[in-house]
Image (cartoon, rainbow, N blue to C red; front, side, top):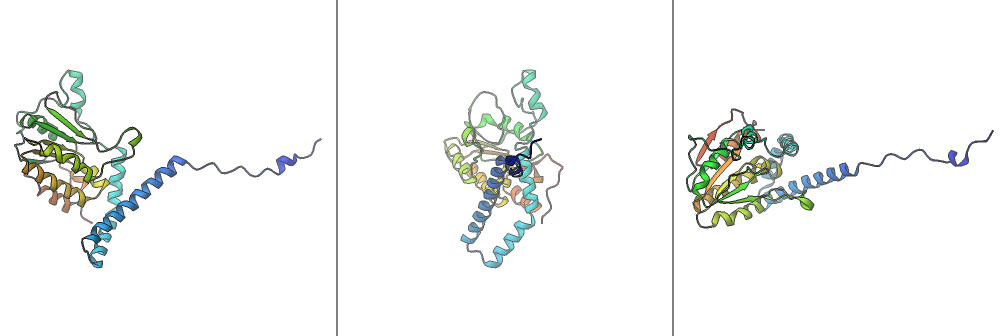
Length: 263
């Protein structure tokens, strides 16, 4: 009968399974982005000459609504684009152009006009888009999932996320503004369609999203363009909803959902 194997007796306990590299890399990237966003926001406030008391109040306010912002961010990553309307899915099977013909009751957006649509899904905004395209030489789509439009007219899509090797990258709001400035400023202006406001709130901040919306409304007014923005009011607190809606020439309410309560 042979004795115990010396090699086996000297063998150490099995090593712990290797850490999930993909999970660790994703967590580290998210942590880095969170710290980077917080520091950028702090620097932006400090550069405006905020006092220590004001900075403290701003930081405490962000901390108070941090859980809501994180949950919004989580939901935007799980399902970045809002679900497409059922009608938009079945129309190709019926041989109709994607988006379908606009309702006769939909009034086109006039040059210099801006319309904000409160809705859980971008349905009425797409009807407005289809009804208003003919009044502008070009259409610009700012969307995570741009709606398919019938042929005719120039259509420009501003991608908010990279693809291929750049799939993990995204455009900052300043870069989005830069992509919009040229088509809006061309002769005849442009009809701008946006349904990614919730994405901007989650990726940047409510304040930056408000500044972007204010800039966009001003630009289309100055260049005789048109603006259609679809958003879910549940993505913002009540005070931000009021700030946003005051920017637009017209607000269409198609959502009974109440926005978040202020912290």
